[in-house]
Image (cartoon, rainbow, N blue to C red; front, side, top):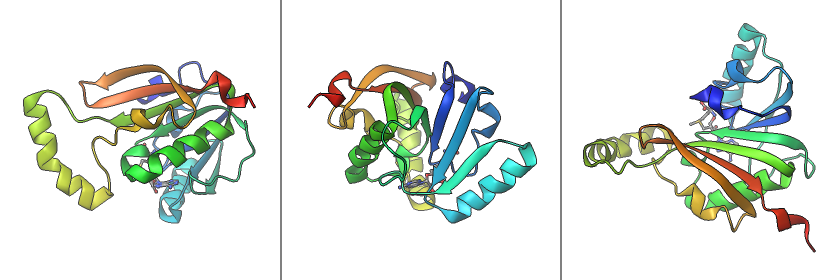
Length: 180
Ligand SMILES: C[S@@+](CC[C@H](N)C(=O)[O-])C[C@H]1O[C@@H](n2cnc3c(N)ncnc32)[C@H](O)[C@@H]1O
């Protein structure tokens, strides 16, 4: 699934909530990637993976809701399984920050879980949900799409990459974001 995240992305890229660096192998050659994460422990593991794989990436400790980058810093942004760990009240501020640091016309790709509509899969996911919440602070459906408009982002595409459980959102800064 992860290679699809990077289709058409090049230039300055941000991996928001980089974790242990599970996207490293898929970074496009023609890119300059920065990875941020709130957790020093996750970043330490990412640094080890960076060394092992020889990945060229600038890793920084930073909160996605309060990033040190100037406006319009990145041509593209990816975030994988970050929004499932962000509380409901943090969804919009995080999306607003992604919009702020993405250049106009840039692309933001968000890979996330969704709660399946299939009764058997939905039942199984609901059984797992308390464990996932306890172990990772994650939820299977944070309804991230519902905050896009308020955050000044347009949904370009939503498609499922694995059954109806893992979805890829492609979004862009809304065209009128600079007006006024
Ligand atoms: C489920 S992990 C996903 C990691 C990685 N993107 C992946 O696909 O494997 C979520 C990551 O988001 C980070 N995170 C949580 N809240 C954050 C925040 N406010 N700012 C930046 N990173 C955050 C966590 O520390 C964790 O590394």
